[in-house]
Length: 344
Image (cartoon, rainbow, N blue to C red; front, top):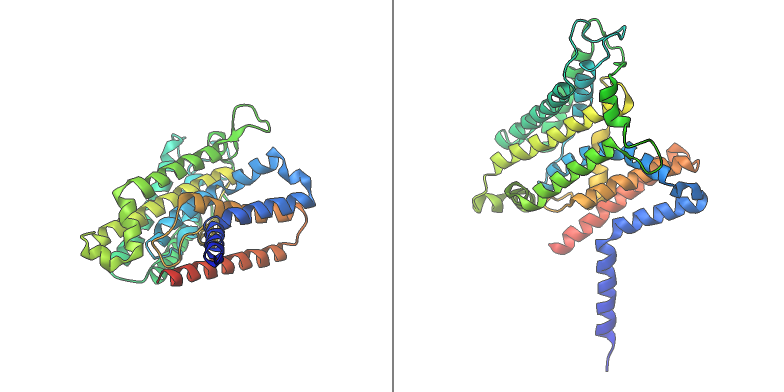
């Protein structure tokens, strides 16, 4: 009796397993490889630092996932991060700082500038969605235009007197605590506030992706927008909501980045959109649209976090790090395209 069908089934099963869990396998291999070079990399402190440094990037990447799953892209994300970082930081300086952005402004409640930053990001997202949905401009071109507009507007704001393009510093402690503070006493097992915020945001996004009508419509639009229209989905309205949701997440990421670093300039967030796209693609978000998960995006962010932190930790040149990141991105996209062709 021939055993060929059994062998083929086993091969197919193994192939499906590696296809489904490839990113998790890559992450484990990276951690093991770096740990073999320097076992100190497996310490709790290092793991916590990686999470702390990449929490804002995770929030931004989750926002990018919304857009990518619809089959679009968003080049304005990084500049929205810079805008909201500058907006929030300019209003949350200590009262006796010698170079206050607004010298005569009374101390505002902590929540007010944070909400302003998130709303600013949401409005940019709405603008992106309106250009894409109503004017039928390709997302690449639409968000390229808003990227330039947002950077210009942020630079004009940043150059206002008396600041005149000086880095914004001297931020209030209650604000910076969001980015650098911990739950409980500072120790190896204390959890940073910013990590908790990222976990809560991830849970909310997971619910939107999997349990809401907007999430179902998002996947349908990315899978086939014409079929979605025929089935009764209001594609334009849902694209507006999706881009607005993404913009709000970029806004939150910018606010938290200012809190984490203790300052802001108009160049904050530069190239963050490319990092977010790379993390999403490596995390399994299809470049063709219609496919993507929250855990996948988070693992994609972690992979690049381990590369940046881990390879620096063992003394690998930053230039080699760029080469490794580039190879991983190309391999992930090539793998995604092969799966897309196979489905077709």
